[in-house]
Amino acid sequence: MHEKFNFNVLEEIREKTKALGLSLEFSEDLSPLRKEVRIRHKTAPNSFAALPMEGCDSNPDGSPSELVKRRYARLAAGAYGLIWWEASAIMQEARANELQMMLTGQNLPQFAVLVAETKTLCKNNFGYEPVYVLQLTHSGRYSRPEGHKPHPLIPQRDPILDPLTGVNTGAVPVSDEYLESLVPVYIASARLAQEAGFDGVDIKACHRYLLSELLAGHTREGKYGGSYENRTRLLLNIIKEVRRACGDDFIVACRFNVFDAHPYPYGFGQDKDDFLTFDPVEPERLVRDLCAAGAGLLSNSAGNPYYIYPQVTRPFDTSSMGIPVPEEHQLESIERLFAFTGLVQKTAGPVPVVGNGYSWLRQFIPQAGAANLAAKRCSFVGLGRSSFAYPDLPLDVFKTGTAKKEKCCVACSKCTQIMRDHGRTGCVIRDSEVYAPIYKEARRRAEERGQRHEASPPVRYSAVI
Ligand SMILES: Cc1cc2nc3c(=O)[nH]c(=O)nc-3n(C[C@H](O)[C@H](O)[C@H](O)COP(=O)(O)O)c2cc1C
Ligand code: SF4
Image 1 (tube, rainbow, N blue to C red):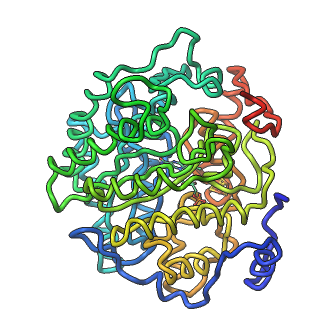
Image 2: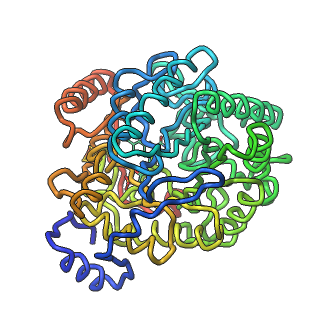
């Protein structure tokens, strides 16, 4: 059963794990968190990573606003070894919202200043610089570059998602020529990131945005659909070309979905007959191919955060509006995410992999992370919502050996709700002075617009099809 977090001491969560028949581990030896991590020619000073978390709050031209500057200054002061910057659109039509980050030739100086200032802040405080990776995205089906109207650019039709994502009945998937025209756009964005002082870029292929959905293009015709080779062709090609254009010193990373939890023939990484069962064959092959193409850093994710099973991506206590209560305990969802990372790290060998799914564990994040690092199930402990709620968690752990319960994310999904309401997002609970009024205002405006978050019944996909 799904139940709210209610643990005070480590023994209680260990007992619950055991009672559920799970194998999650917690270690009281936190020394693995201090370990440096080599990423190609760079070295991250410790094993904490801030995962990409978009604030939907850049300036209209994509440059960093005051809220963006504040977010990255707080992260830099939090002592992360790796800061994986949020989704930044490769071009205007690829933006998921009108304030999504977007690095361009015109706004490059503003990015360069923010990168330099925050790295200096970290150097002054701790004597080292974190590794910076910028996530490059094309939002595909979830593109909404202007106002509140979706402008989906789809790699293939999907009878489940089309009616929910503003895809008209006569809509046509983007052409092979369109997909190929994106390669130089990714290269140009990567070179701008390099010029701005980032240590690398991520060719984002998770959460069912364009390159992620293309991995599941079983029904697409032509050279980017059907076979495994066709479905992965564009992603692998972009990685090779960016690698070639940016040189050996620059990290080309990839955050990708290993498991869509979406039925065949519309999903990636699951059993053809049971979409809730993971099938590792293609994901493992993809990891080997990503490494061979030159990816120097990986982060696996899973699921479609917009659809009715967001626990596959981020286990929560309270859902955002319209999301049914999951039919599994949060610790089961976490075990699945940890197992994915373990598999990806084993397959990737020396290429470091960033784990995720930790935030629900609150004050026990360090113990779970240390156990995974010690068992080589990941190279970094990646923090998503926790980096919004508690940006200085790594610093507290290094200074005091504990994460403070009262500063932790409570997995309430309010930051997701702001996104769904098309507002600027952050932590409504632990950063309430800034984000509680924003949350209320975004809710009010969404209601005024008549934006609906229909309550979805907890149906299985097979019933929907
Ligand atoms: C508000 C919000 C924004 C997010 N933005 C991004 C993003 O820009 N890129 C990305 O790959 N994942 C994004 N994620 C997913 C997180 O990086 C992470 O995978 C997920 O929240 C699970 O980790 P956690 O349990 O530590 O939160 C976002 C999640 C939330 C809730
Ligand atoms: S609003 Fe804050 S506490 Fe709630 S899920 Fe988001 S980060 Fe966590």
